[in-house]
Image (tube, rainbow, N blue to C red; front, top):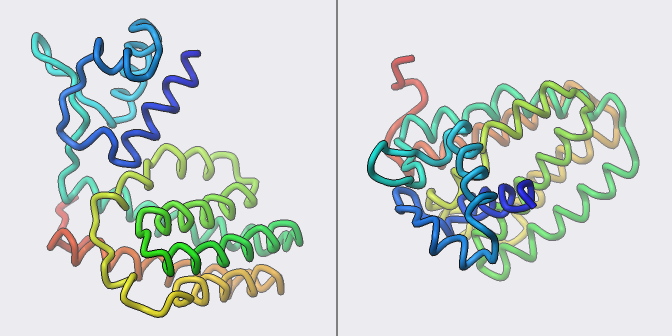
Length: 216
């Protein structure tokens, strides 16, 4: 039960159902989720260690309200992890992976045609997460999943993406699929990096700050 409650809470934060800065009232949230307060509280503690919620002593627990720097740091993790994962997946060239990625590309076109940016964002994450899993690199997978990349999408306006032809995103991603299918690891890595850089530019435009401006 604790794991299920934890994953449901995390999904609610990722999808924006629990909004940034929102105060979490344990009693009300436990009632809505149909769980007791013990697994809920334990899940909130786990999420606090991951930086998704923030507990203020003698006050309350809040959904973390990410700063522009936070969002750029989270998203830029993709630049480090996805190109390598894509290279490793291409070396394997698993036919079942290729078929799965092609189906996700088809789904991207349907998502764009329906005007659902939220759904397109989730499908895009599934596409890249599927490649990361296919890499077989356990530490890379762990780093990717703990980076909370999905939390950025709902907080960014990707309106320009929705103005493009419905198959634009799918066509760009199909180039990656083709490189994986051909086991062209160098090209697959390069295309993955270009794809992430394009997404990062959208994030930078949305929040009015670039990655280069951050003083680490």
